[in-house]
Amino acid sequence: MTSPTRTRKRGTPWSWRRTPRNSDGTMTLIEHLYELRNRLVKAVFFIVIGMIVAWFLYDHILKILEHPYCSLPAKHRLQTSGDKKGCDLIFTGPLDGFLIRLKVMLVAGIVMASPFWLYQLWAFVTPGLKKKERKITVTFVISSSVLFIGGAALAYFVLTKGLRVLIESAGSGTVAALAVTSYLRFVLAMLTIFGVSFEVPLLIVMLNMVGILTFERLKKMQRILIFGIFAFAAVVTPSQDPFTMLALAVPMVILFEGAVLVAWRHDKRKAARQDKEFFHNLSDDEASPLEDPVDEPQSVDETNR
Image (tube, rainbow, N blue to C red; front, side, top):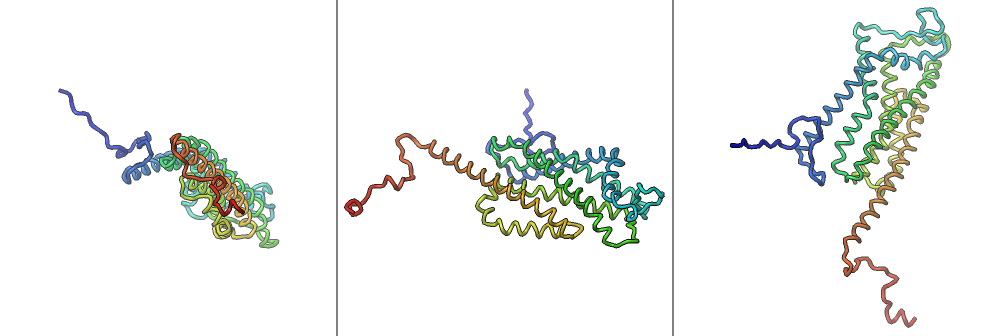
């Protein structure tokens, strides 16, 4: 006597394997929640792995983050050792050192693991896309990683150049004895804000691909969105100075215009593909519903004119 086979309810237990889906990519609400949970768990796992790697590279990462401050003239930075090439950041709380290490590890882990958790984000979106469109996953992951790193690199360059202006504005005879907690909070905020902001155009492309944000809608809202980018840059930049705001807003506008062009091309190709499929499904003896006005018969009055 054979034992009855047990059927596993689709998507209920947690698994590293991708949740099976219907051929059309549709899922129930419960299946969406299980899929979201699985993707979040995987993303957190990869970020933790990145944090472990950052633990061993902490000294090197800290020197990179200290460079904008250490590049200041010797008369404007704190030097407890008497060495003109040295620079010191201070902290006063007994737990500050450990908390600083955790913050640096978290940001570094997110950056290192960005290709992996970005793939989990894309994999959660792809059920609404066709098989051909899901093939651009690699392109999405590479593009998002490059944009995030590019935004962080721009923030690092702006910080290196702009911090000197901010510190020297205090005047001669002043020394910047910066607390490591506030300084690293400022630096990490700049890197994170610039990196995440550079992902916005890619988000626009994603919404366009799934049919939520069309090119026509983007075209109508283009001026408002550009104004919103400048307002967003003015609010989120930690230094609140015009130079940093423009350094964030101008590249974002350029990337936004690039996203609009991608949306235009995608919608154009999508419309052409739909027209091709529509006419392909017509039988040979079936008339097309579209009539060419040139071929329409003229009236008797128009013929006599």
